[in-house]
Image (tube, rainbow, N blue to C red):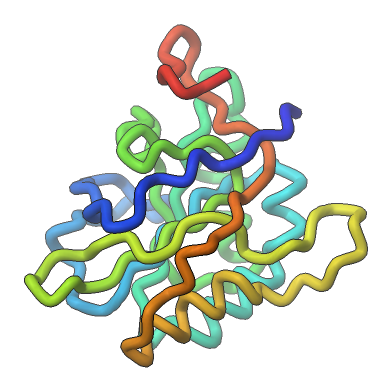
Length: 194
């Protein structure tokens, strides 16, 4: 496990196009999303940092699923980490009662477009007034990490969600997420990796 910070994709970046399978077997296309804000969560089944925040992801799903389009994305290599395969991801979602789509980014195209570096990592997009979804927040859920005794309350991400939903400006002073590195397919690591 390599402790890795997020790359902090530039604010204002547009929501990447994607057309990916869900762990349920159905597909989700970015063009089928509505005009509600979109929260992409780069997560997986095996990472201890993700396991640590699963209860707060469940609470976010409960608190915001009507107002925000929550979407889980697992981009880890199934060559090196088969424990993040669709069956395991589906079990994870079922166990926690997650209602949001959970995408399998097996070719890692969405992870590359997001410049994703770690799990968990959070990207909040909202409409920019021209019909496009623009990045308003990227980084950590909150300051809680396994074993650091800080409360798991989602305060950083929740503040950004509340700002977007009330039409306020999101604080641009944002803290990188930290977790396990995205497990890239062998020989296909992006230039920002490692």
